[in-house]
Every structure is written in C-alpha cells, then in structure tokens.
Image 1 (cartoon, one colour):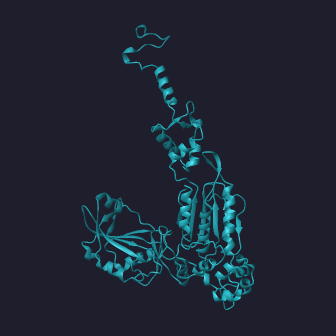
Image 2 (tube, rainbow, N blue to C red; image 1 turned 90 degrees about the vertical axis):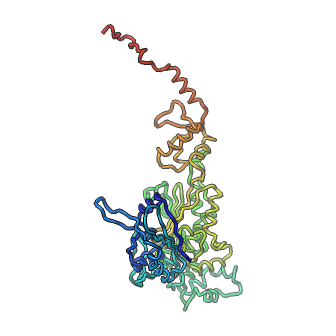
Image 3 (cartoon, rainbow, N blue to C red; image 1 turned 180 degrees about the horizontal axis):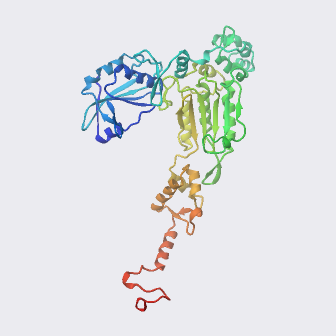
Length: 495
C-alpha cells in the first residue's frame, strides 16, 4: 500500500521545525542510518509510543543550533528506512507512516507514528531500548529485562511463589466463607490447587492476596492501601498532612470496599465554598470504587510499594505502582483492555458481589460518573514507576458561569471567593473573568468598595448611573479660552 503524502503550509513547517524533542518525539536527519533509527523505534515502542520525523537537519551556527528542512529527494530515498521497519518483529502494524512535503521547501520528511507494543521490540543490533525523556537508553542485564517484562505485562508477578504455608490459604476464614457461598461441593484445598494458586504446597502471590486473612504479613509493602489526608490544595505539602497515614489491610476482596468507605468518610468532612455557602464535597462513590479497584487489581505486585490515596481539599489522587501494561497508553486506557494480573482478575470475580463487576468497564464508568455530577473528567498520569488517577472537584461550568451561579444566591462576590469556587489560582486571571462579565453588562463593581474590599455584584445599572451623575456634577472640562485664576490668587494682569 503506497504511503500518503501530506502537504504542510509554511506556518506548519515552521511549527514542526520548532518542536522540542521529548519522551514522545524525536527528529532525525536523512543521513541517519536505518539501523540507528531502529534504536529510537525500539525505545518508543517499548515505552509509551511516539513520533519520529526523519528529514529534519540540525545545524550548528554562531547563534546556536538551527533546524532545517532537509527531506528525502523522493519517496524511494526512504526505502531502506521503511524496509528495516517492516523487518522488525513484533512491530507489525504498530506504526503508521506518511511523507510530509511543504510549500517552498524541497524534499520529503518521513513521519512515523509508533504505538506501544505488547511485546518487547529489539533494535537491529539485537539490543532493547526504552525512552527516558529525549534519550534512548539500552536495557542491560537480566534484572533490567525482567523489570521491563513486568512493566509491559509480559511477565506477571501474580504467579510467583511465596513463603506462606498451605494452611494460610486453605484454612483461613476468607477461604472457608468463600467455599460455603460459592463452591459448597468442593474442598478449599482442592479449589486452590485446581486454580494453580497453590503449587507444590506453596501459595502464589494471587493465592495469598485472595485467600489469606492478612496478606500484608506475607507480602509487606505491596498489598495494602495507604490513605493520606492533606488539608491544602498544594501538592507535596507534608506540613499540611492531617494526622498519620491510614493503612487499610486485609484480603483483597474486602480491601477495596474498606478503602472506599474510609475515603468517602474523609472526603465528606471537606467543605467547599459553593452558591449556598460552605457545602460538603461529594465525589460519586462508583468513581472512587472503580479507580481503587483498578489500582489494586492491575498494579504491578513486583514493586514493593502500597497503593496510595492522597486526599486534598480539591482533589483525590490514587497512585497505583507500575506503569501501564501491554499496549495500553494514557489516551487509550478507557478503550483498551489488558489485564496485568489475569488470574487475580478472574478469581476475584467469583466472589459474591465482586468489586470488578464489569470487566473492562472500570475507568469508563468513572468518567461517566464524574460527568453525571457535572465534574471535570479525571486526569490520568503515567509516571516513572506508577500510574496516577486524579479525581478533581471542579465543575464543568466555565468560570463565568460559576460566578453567575454564585450570585444567584449571594449579593456579591470578591476576587478571593471567585478563585475559591472556580479553582483559578491567579488573582489577575480572576479579574479578567470579572472584566469580561462587566463588558457584557452582567456584573458591576459594588459602589464605594476598592482595594482589598472590592467586590462585584449583578449588573443593575445603578453603579453606571452613579458614575455618570458624578461626572455631570463636575461639569464639562474647561477649555483653554475660559481659563480663570483660582479664587484668592492674582490675575495675570496683576502680576
């Protein structure tokens, strides 16, 4: 299938030449060998995907480095680069290619869009690379390759054997209750062996998480949920930590429900300024439930870190250890299914009223629940060794709408109150919101209030009329020909 050619305007070409290299973008000159290019292909596909522009030269000049459009003479000039891509396995259809031409610039730039692969992709030299910032770093040593396998979900820690005893998962309260409710005709010992969570008399990580009464005693620092409440809106404000961190422990089935209940209680203690004054903050319970369920079931258990829930005055951050697995990326997370711990996901679903009721619907349900409450959609961030989902208590309404809604039940609004209800941090930015509403004749300043006491009210025309009356009382400005000496002073003829 022929590769399409897209024509850029001069402005688009200039913007392309200004793009900064990053974790997701790399620019190369045509002189780069196909083999060298595969290092970047490997790095991007093994990490989060990205783009490569081949045909952008960087030239050293007195004033610094300058980029130039130095594309291939024709499409055939890029044949070797395309051929090496086609030979890479398992790249397959995990990339798209197009040529870029531009008005007033000779040659074609090869634009490659690369997607994250489920498998590990090696460069032409046989080495594995990952992308960190704008660098391609080789993955060296068995431990580093194993870490990448866990990151991509190729290898799962859920099947690792633990030091627990067989009795820890065959004679616990949780397995006995589960057996009575779900598998009354089967002995617990037969069940765990058949499900391969008891191997050679030793429980696996999945077996401990599901059927042990206290998994945290066997899997410390990787099987609990830590809840921290910060009485501030700022990140990393340790001084604002309210009390000691709360640790939620127990088998994974009760872990999610207990954590949701505790988070809900803490969140409802927060008061937020709204149209009716101070109101309790409320996030949809299903949103919290789904995000916590995902954080627990799809985390990387090879990382010795607990799931963390950080509750701020204006948001909740839920951090799950491990990068996104397989081919999942932040843009595709609500549309793509990939279970890092498939056995754990399957077996917990066999409990009565399981936390993961709808397979693959978790975060999609969260987005829908936030939307129903007219709250902004969650933010999802992939960090070096974790994924963070942020639930914000910020309305979908524009700042102007929120100001007018507030004034429906309140006589006036100050800059500080406006920032509180809109989430705007800058005093000057808030002023611009007020000015826009003033220009539309929806707001006016409260007469006689200035400086720190300044406030705004709904437009009535009274302030405008008062200003006009004050100007009229002063009379028209005197012209140069009507100059008169001030009272008590001498006239020019007397000087």
